[in-house]
Image 1: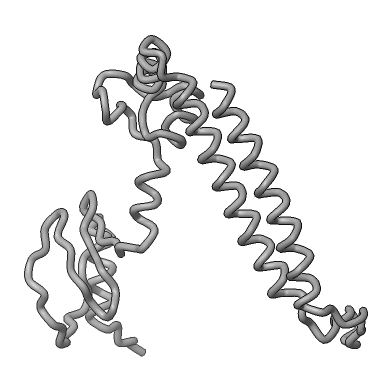
Image 2: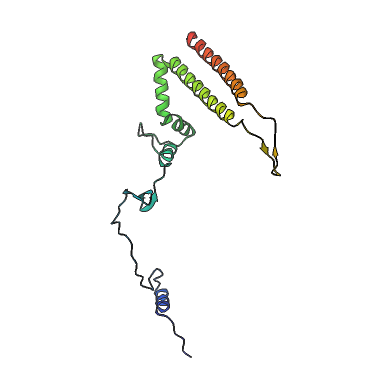
Length: 196
């Protein structure tokens, strides 16, 4: 009894023997929209996503691409274009100031030589303190928003009542403490400014 072998299987065997592993064995007919030829660096939108071609690969453009660029340290400093950034100080100064250690140290040396270093130091310290106060205020607001709960669900699924928390009372206490901390920090900063 002769067994029929389909043409596509015969063609596949021919392709394997001739080491043409990616050769086609069937002809497929279909319809697809033609988008034209796209080149390196082209950006287009398709089905609600933004696409681009980088290094010959089609990729989606995400919202975090700009964040990735700011975090990744370049090979050479973008300000002086001469120093290769590879040390720990370069990593630190890139995260904080966006430049290499040589550029940062030259700026700080110029400030010290011109006598403006103390003023720069005080401005930096006060900016850090104000940012810390702002973060503490946001944390306190989050805490206050999460305090008005009816109870907590245990592992068994039972709702336990741990005494109802009064949101106004807690917000009053937290805001008083925040204002005390703010007054203390601002008075210390003013004392530092007066000493200079």
